[in-house]
Image 1 (cartoon, rainbow, N blue to C red):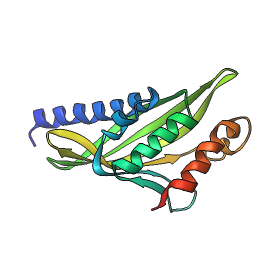
Image 2: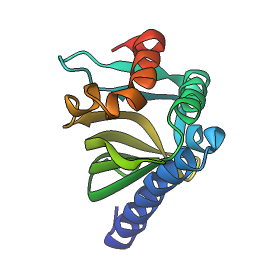
Image 3: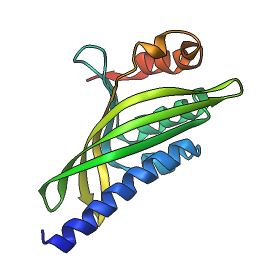
Image 4: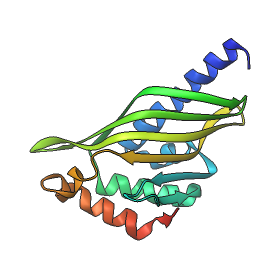
Length: 164
């Protein structure tokens, strides 16, 4: 890949992740799912090595709709993007995550951590083939007042996800 092609690919990948955040935060489940390949994976890292994941557009849609229903008022912010190209159609991506949850009484940090992703160029568009989220603040979301808002989503993920 030449330098111009690499710069264009980096912008397109960052645009993909901006679209990922905007769609879920604006209650657009199908737009969020469209950020993934047909067999794409979204994985939530567990406290141990094993995570819980959602595979393919059908499961990703179910996840997105649950997120929208159980955690309205989120804002996902991603910074410090690092993209390493494996070749012209495959890349590894890592970025820092900060997520807020707006409630009448306060704005909470519901997610502090990072994402690691594999992205692929499919039909001239970059798509996520596997995305894993790691949280630094897992202990904070287990205690009040944040636990009251987070526990329904955490329980849903555990009950509906596939062990990875």
